Amino acid sequence: TAAGNRTVHRPANLAARAAMVLRDNDTGTLVTASPRLYPHMWSWDAAFISMGLAHLDVSRAVQELRTLFSAQWHDGMIPHIVFTGDDDYFPGPDRWGTDDAPQRPHNARTSGICQPPVHAIALRRIIDTARRTSEADAGIAEDFAREAWPALRRWHGWIARHRMSEACGLVTIVHGWESGMDNSPRWDAPYLAVQPDADLPPYVRLDTLKVDDPRQRPSDDEYDRYLWLIEQLRRAGYYPDKVVETSAFLVGDVFVTAVFALASETLADIGAELDAPASEIAELRSWAGRARDAARRSCHPETGMARDYDVHTGTWLDTESLAAFSPLLCGGLPTETEQRLFDTLDGPGWSGHPGLLAAVPPSVSPHSGDFDPRLYWRGPQWPVVIWLFGWAFEQRGWQRHASEFRAQGVHLASDGSFGEYYEPFTGEPLGSPNQSWTAAVVLDWLC
Ligand code: 9WN
Image (cartoon, rainbow, N blue to C red; front, side, top):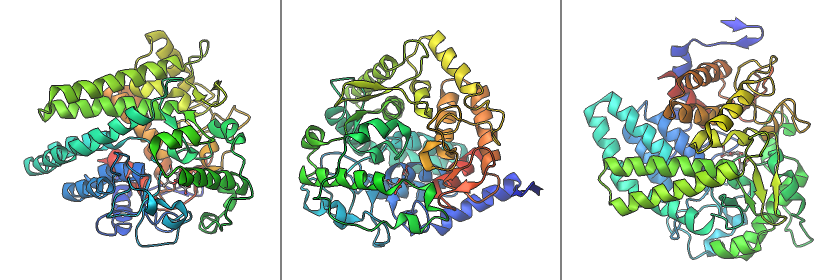
């Protein structure tokens, strides 16, 4: 059927198409983030992809996480990209220069930063899906959970050890790419301090050649800053403490912090089911508690909106981005503040904006001066982020909001193109088509 110019697929057809995207992008041991734009494995993409795969084949789903975890660095970091043999992405492994870092894994070439720690959440989702499918599938998922427990603990431990900031309590990031929301207006102010000098080696972008309209991607000026930070990381030898000491970009990220809190609590619950040592479970819960407290303390005293923190300038960053709702992911707010955040989220500045095709929050409020409906993390709607909020709402007992996000998320993606992100007023898919994590979350919504 067609609504205006927009094709709309029925649920069964949409699920079949989503499954096809995951199969088409599967290289055997990993599903690339997208066919052309991102021909490698991305850390948080892999997590979402694995829980989509669980609806097709639980063994294949756990293999996805196994592939990612096998590229874990010796110090515990899970790298943001695991490169396949394909060199059709910039910056590739040579530019990252991670081959010289002693902490790197020896069986894989990777980038040298990380991404939001959603992996324990994916594991939870895989276990739950498998338990609903069959006893045999449940066994596969639970065996894998035992296998993956040490890797996940080391990963969370790495964040707790190297990234929980003394200055603000939030989990810090040293590159906008670590937030997963690369060019969000959240990072505009901190990026002003990133000033590439003449030492920045020349480079040629490939990403802008692979989308219909390069204006849907970050600017060249932004890329210079992204590449300059890589130069600094390289010079710091990717040693985590040296990186934090030397990076021109050091920001407490409230979204990553809330994800870390939620994922640590989720991992602790998985550990309790597996009879993991009580001390290990308690440690995870204490990290979750610290992160939750920090997210709560970041909230603006009047609006209740959560904020990031620029460690170098010592300033709170007020941005009307979806990240301002992060404490709803992990809890810890007084009931009144939580209610105020929900009212704002449902209101005309966000999901309740009358012009939206689907009533789910855009990455930036249409009422904000920073809003651009076609530009990447500066306005479009991202199904994967909607999934994350919806799942958290369900865990927290807010069923109405959870099912509303699910229904509206499916509505947004029902054109069947599995866009990387969507223009919020028209529903036009933007960025890469057949983006794996979009297909994965749609599949999960529908199953
Ligand atoms: C840089 C793969 C990734 C996502 C990120 C998204 C985008 C990469 C890029 O694509 O980032 O890591 O080249 O723009 O911002 O969230 O994981 O889908």
